[in-house]
Length: 134
Image 1 (cartoon, one colour):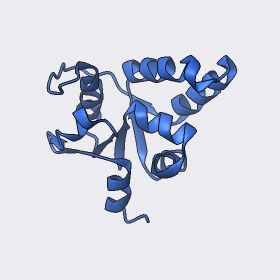
Image 2: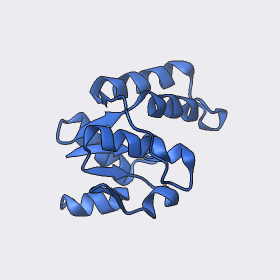
Image 3: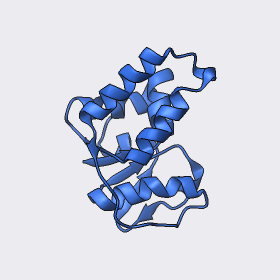
Image 4: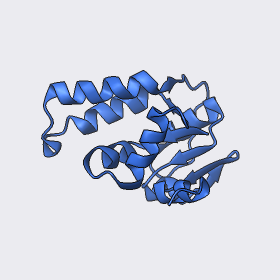
């Protein structure tokens, strides 16, 4: 499956594990294809660098290099303004550009959309249910 992950999925995967980590591990294992934009990379870098996460710069860089190593970078050609939170439109633009199957998020602004142009927007648990993983 072609996936676009919201920053909160990456963060949850890193610090709390659970369903987000299972999904990211599927991407690392080549089961699912991960897509990302420069804007998403920048947001993730900014969030992971926040003092509240207590990560050293080397740890943030290592994590970002791992993500960049498996993610397919896309360059959206179309501006989309559908989400209540304008920052979330980047995920939709990425998904449209790569013709993703799913956007996986824990963000209510994205989740309330449920679908955009045939791209389903689901929680981590919802996605694992779809692919039949307990």
